[in-house]
Amino acid sequence: MATSFDLESVDGVAIGVGRGAITLEEMKQLAARLWQQLEGRTDRVLWDLRDAQFELEPDEVRELAEFAKANSPGGDLRTAFVVSADLEFGLVRMFEAFRGMEGATIAVFRTREPALEWLRRDLR
Image (cartoon, rainbow, N blue to C red; front, side, top):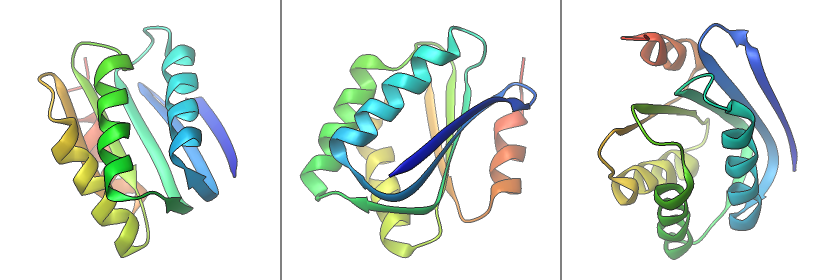
């Protein structure tokens, strides 16, 4: 899988882009790497995964959500996922349900602009 991070392209929003097949372990590594690079600069994250295919089973979605609960930055964290396929859309919705943590808000979108608009809302 190919990934990139762009912390400067949209004021106040960190962007992670993933392409190709993504496994559970790769998702954990990507998330940890992005959180480390944030270094308190923002609490808004966009994952652009329109060109990615998730290689996850439903129990792995729960494991990923538990990983995020334990390792993501605290505070008012808002994360948007942009996906193109129905399967990925459904898996992100499962992640959202499993993640359920006070102070963390997740949304899934099909296109990037509405996701960015949602992330910028109420930006400090």
